[in-house]
Image (tube, rainbow, N blue to C red):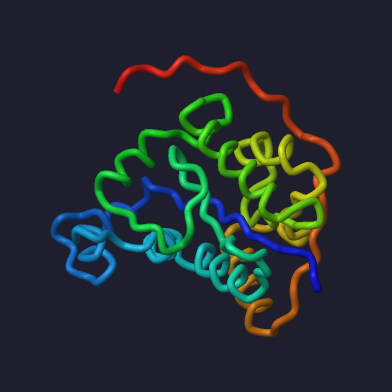
Length: 204
């Protein structure tokens, strides 16, 4: 049997034009109507709309190659302030406000602590032979400064991501998912960034 493989998807930008369209009270398309409904819209659907090709590639790729252990999902979205959530986790205006309040910054407890909590639980579920594939940036410490100290060499990312933009990454993942040929992953042999001192968060 292959080693358990779980994917972590970095979040979409919540302040771009498409995010404003999704959250507009005047929007009539399906995702916007679901967002304003009591049930909310699945975060995977919302983030796909917000970031278009890039997140669509992440979802398609992770679904094609995930191999989770029993009683554990194979794909999780990094949701600032909430930790890790599955793609069908419902996003509504209240949750959106919290997402927007919490910056993707490891120095902030409101971002770091929920993510650390969920990563530790995930590490326990996949065991020492499992792999966690980050589909997101490793150029800064915003994700790896939290993930790497817990996961170590179990944290991987597609080597071809280095040096290419988001749209190219999205297209690359869609092609790989369609062909059934998984990308090659590389490790982060050591933390690339030092954790910054913890910030004091102002009242909101």
